[in-house]
Length: 421
Ligand code: HSE
Image (cartoon, rainbow, N blue to C red):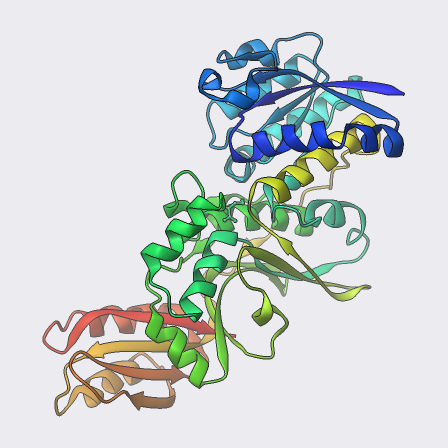
C-alpha cells in the first residue's frame, strides 16, 4: 500500500465534492489502486463557515498548505488566475506535483506553468501536472489527447464545452425564460462564480485554448480565440430553428485548414440529425477528427461538483500511481484564420413598411453577401425578418450588419447573427 498526502486549495462546489468522494471511496481506491489518499490540509478562505471541514486540518492561509512539507500533491480548485498562479508556482518550487481544474489559469498562463514543470522534471521526473478537470468536467478529454489521439494528425475538434450554456439552451428549447434557466443552472452548481463567463462564451474559449494547444502542439491562449456567447439568442431563434429542422448549440471549434488554425466559439445552427444535436442539459461533448481513428465523439457531464471532482480524483490517482508523466510536444506555431467563411442566419427586428427588405438586401449585396432564403414573420412590430445567406466571409457579414443596424428608423433592435453548420 502506498500513501499519498494531498493539500486542497478551495472547498467550494468541486472541492467539497472531492472530499466526499475520497471519504466514500477510500476502501475501493485502496483495493483497486493500492493507494491511501490522505487529506492532509484544506485551504479555504471561509473554512470556519463550512461545517463539513470541521474534521479536517483547515486554514484560511493558503500558503500554509503549499508550504506544508508533508504534502505530495497540491490540488488547486480556487479558479481565477491569482492567487492560483502564485500558489501553484510555489507548490512546484516546493517540489510538489499539482492538480488543477482551473481553465482560466491554463488558458492564460499555461505556457509558463508547463515550461516550469518541464524544467523541474529534468531533475525530478516525479513532478507533474494533472489538469483533466479543466476541460469538460467528467469527460476524459485531456487523457485521450495525450495518450490516444497522439499519433496521427488531428484535423479538428468540435465541442460543446460549457454545461451552463447547454443547460440554458435546453431550457430555452422547452420555452423557459433566460433568468429562470440561469438561476437553476447556478443552483445546480454548473455556473461560474460570475456566470457572465459562461454566457459570453469565455469559459468555452478557455477550454478550447487548452485542448487545441494539446491537439495541435502549439501554445494557444484565450486571447487568440474569436468568441461569441449566447447573449443575443432568444426563444424565437429556437422556434425558427425548430421549424427549419435545426438546433442551436454553442460550439467551440478548432480546425486545421492548410496549415492555418481556425479557432472559434459561437452559437451555431446544426441539422437536427447532427451528432451534437442530442447533447442536452449540462452535458458536454467533443467530436475529434484524427488521421487514423477517424471521428470519435465523447459525451458526459461537463459541469457540476461530482463530475468535475471525479476528473480531479482520477488525476490524483494517476499521479500517485506514477502513471501520469507529462510528455511535451515540440511546440510549433501556426498562423490563425482571421476571416472564416460560413453560411449565416440573420434575424432582423424591423418596422413593417415598404422598402425594408429592399434596404436590407441592398446593403447585403453591396457587401457581396448572397441571400439563400428570406422570410418575414407576420405580426406586430417589431417583425422578424429571417435571412439565410449563402457562404460568405465573416468580415462581410459584420460590416453589412453594422451598416444595417445603424438605421434606427427601420431596425428596432440589434440583429441576431448565427453561423449555420
Ligand atoms: N461553468 C462551467 C460550465 C463549469 O458550465 O461548463 C465547468 O467548467
